[in-house]
Image 1 (cartoon, one colour):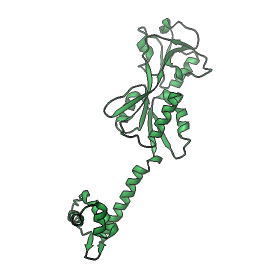
Image 2 (cartoon, one colour):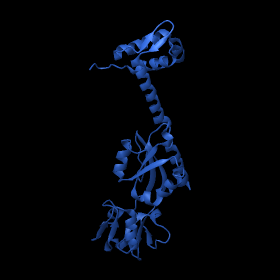
Image 3 (cartoon, one colour):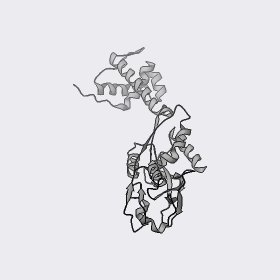
Image 4 (cartoon, rainbow, N blue to C red):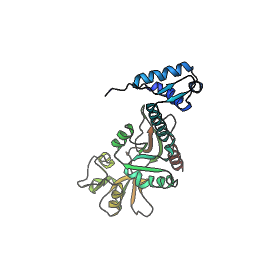
Length: 274
């Protein structure tokens, strides 16, 4: 089978001429000379090895191949329009840390989805995976505790997180190693804050489970205070030496945020300020 050498530069001249069936009108629309239109189509025909247009002094007729090409190009234009103009109805892809989803972002989703035309997919991932998938274009935006700033990504600080030690009963925080530690993962603040570690470690990959186990008296934990709800009935302790934490929204460096991403970002900013 002969290989088609399709030069896309000349397709615009063909499609405009095919629609008008007139070289003069095509030249006016393209704002180039009529001879240039004719030459571009001739070069296109040479590249595909097929005559696309029958020319005469009074009339222009499309060949069968020309009609087929015009149909394909018109469908292609509609598909392109759907990609760019139909994005209001597209699905947003969001990556987020587990605790932020369960204790903050649910309210954002509730407000965002009041618009029935908007769809959203939310995935919980660890911090490194969130960064990786954002940089690979798998997410439209990411919520995390890291300020990601590079040539591809920008982050905005939404609010601060205050870390607190929690327990069911009264304790002396200096004796934390005497109690079981309930942790989200091996990189928990308890491991960094205390040189002497507890003999009993309970690691559960769910911040909700961490709080629940502390409420049941299983052990102690360090969590962001915004994860606590009224009526949780736990003791809280402010500790020195805990890193200052913040919650950030990160997106790719769009020159102009596309819709509906812009709408979600504006909603989040409003909620963060309130």
